[in-house]
Image 1 (tube, rainbow, N blue to C red):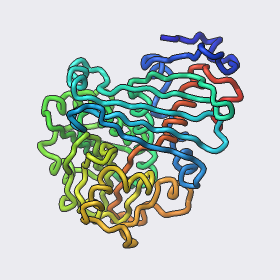
Image 2 (image 1 turned 180 degrees about the vertical axis):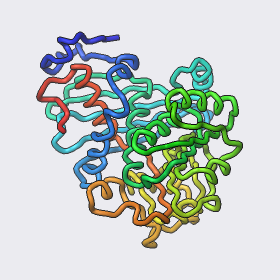
Image 3 (image 1 turned 135 degrees about the horizontal axis):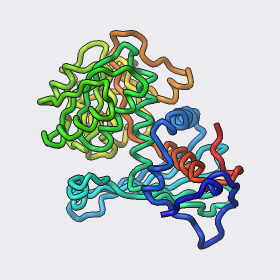
Image 4 (image 1 turned 90 degrees about the horizontal axis):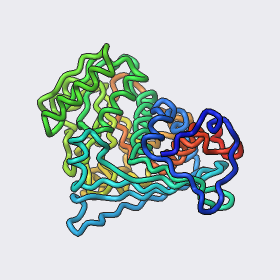
Length: 356
């Protein structure tokens, strides 16, 4: 592990020589970075993407002969106009190792982010993050969504899922809204109880309860968060009531789905990170491909989060609206997360420092 000294953190560094590319491990990355550090950079990345100032490509691989259930690898690359670097990320999750890692309270995913000079193509650094950057930037996106769409009067949150992202989404929401009660549900009641205990420690002012079902979560909450790898819907539109908000971040490929089509049909405002990608992956893709959702009606046409943040489209328009945010996850989020991380590690010179 590379542990930079204070002098190294503040010094100006040239691009590394060939064969001397620094590699930073997950411990160094987590020590240098917090979700709060990424909220504004991620918001700016959404705006730039929706303005057409960025490129991001996604490839989802299923390397095992046993198919998607055995594991997947997400490859996401990104550029942003005016940025001095571009990135290529590989994020992995495999069932063969996930359960054992979870039992040891270790990250269940893996992967790395490679950072390159946008002018020369030279490799600058490798962030061997064990999925940490993906986790942090996704949580930051949840906070951005909450600021844009969750009423300031919301007090009760519910989370479907018990993993790292479920925990981070609750913490991200609580950082921008005054949450007083959180309901937690997971397929494994023991893991749900563990997450509830962790949240009680981190949010000492919040009452945390374990729910008996996804329906119980939805019926109790003002804000519903879903962060699972489910391949079948867990949340039904029939359970929703006026004024609620849903943020769904788990279904990030063509095989996964957390929300049934009725959730999307009931949305007065359907917000996505990318119109293009949401028609290829996740809940919206599934509903459209099965003929359960039509996007040519004004009510269900997705609005990009970046358009709302940029003032080009309204967000929540009344207290009674049901708003749904479906996030696939964009490479431009990884790019700005990598920039911020390397700057905090002292690994980028002034000519590579992230812009404000």
